[in-house]
Length: 221
Image (cartoon, rainbow, N blue to C red; front, side, top):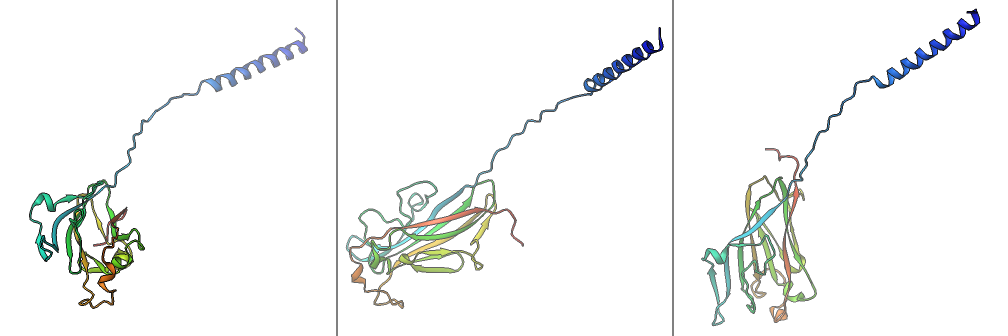
């Protein structure tokens, strides 16, 4: 075999070995697969709001103002968490309020969710023009250790001193606050309210709203 032929043969064999090594390097790597099954479920923020006590100063059948403490547990205790036609102050259909009428409802707020939350309370007048004169003379007070009061027509937001949450509730915790509604007698009230006669026959609608927002950091002791 000539030297030229041997050179060609060596070159050919060398090329084939290189190709074989490349092929071996491509397919000989170890492989494996791990499939991790993940399950995520979002937590739930859920609050309950219940009335636990009720005291009413309202008209009796003879037209006189009398105080009545609702003694029956079934009448006083009402769950307002879900939609209900029940009035927070126990005012029934066709029941009228007059100067001197007063309603005091004790409310219980409870955290039945998976997370802690901060909360605040708001009174929202739904239509200030519908019963404007009545709204100017009906005072609403939210007591949470201190009194926060204003007239229905002005609305009311009850937060903390730093304009933040009124308070925070951990999971399973409860708190109470009192909401008082009074139709002030203009002849006796220190406020410069309108003449009571202007409010005769008027109606006003308002909402009691409890706002709750998830709290992520525990309050400093």
